[in-house]
Length: 312
Image (cartoon, rainbow, N blue to C red; front, side, top):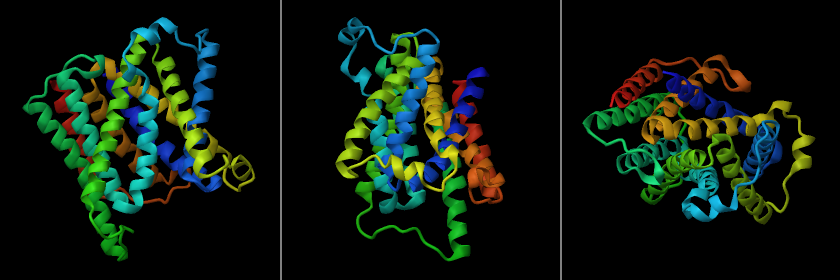
């Protein structure tokens, strides 16, 4: 039960961080700059926690030499996921940019559990986990797709999706979701190897920050710090990295304990629940919207799927 509570809380963190990142992106005038600022602040935050708790920021060279190469790519996968969604949004629209990565997360998390990839314990895929996964995906589609389609009909608006072949971009969206689930598994195993999920999360953010630093300087030529500091956005836009670090840390903590599949499932439930709360109460200056019956039913269906998977 403790793990379930942690998982839901971890999921709720992501829409909060997303809402803050929207403001940060406006202040810095670039999604890449916002992503770099988020990763950098998270790295500093986690580094301070490690120092204050008496832990080293460095990894024993023996561990690095003895462990497989893939154990250190979690940060790269995080950057791919973040920047990939930025690229996908204008090509697939808001709904499919949510649905396709979620599908990839579910598929990859179940594969990781079934085969015991990335050093994690095996959790065999059976019909119960299959039904649970379908319920989670169906609940998300109902809460996101159906509800948004109804909103479009009322407002007579359409997503800004470019015409042409969507299938390649849909496949990319699924692959991005698979990268996200893989990062969860890798960070979880790394945390077990070095006996610290906080340190494994720190390593992931260090690698991601360095990668984003290079990408931002190549594309935007500057980090935009002056624009951000002098903008009229609220001070809390700079807390995006704190919430981002807690999200990755929660995943790294849960994955080796309950499996990647159940971790992804519970966190997805928390994400949708958190999004509904933000919209309902208009937190973080978000547009206030009532919780529709479709969103509520979708959330209940997702909960049923999570409970099924947890029973296995």
